[in-house]
Amino acid sequence: MRYRLTFMSGVVVGYVLGARAGRERYEQLRKSAQRIAQNPAVRNAAESAGQTGRGVAVKAVAAATAKVGDKLPPKVSERVRRLTGNGAPIEDDWGTTNT
Image (cartoon, rainbow, N blue to C red; front, side):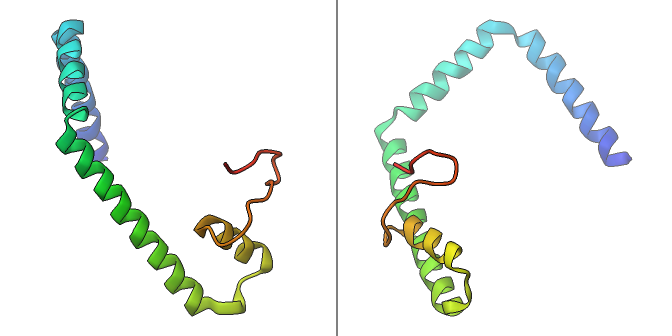
């Protein structure tokens, strides 16, 4: 109960301070965030972090697949192959394609 009360009081204080700051301060913060997001250094860092994350994910999938082996059901194995790029993309159950 104590943590819930602390959280709710934080929400109320944040709302009151945010309401007092008004639309003008919101616009300033939004423009600052856009400027930071459009910075080439930030974009390069985000892109390299994304590539690193994808590389780690591919290695993790390969390690898990090697460890589990043929114990996976065929549907799961096919899904893993498609997600890692080793299988042909097929239409899913919802009538949409994974493009």
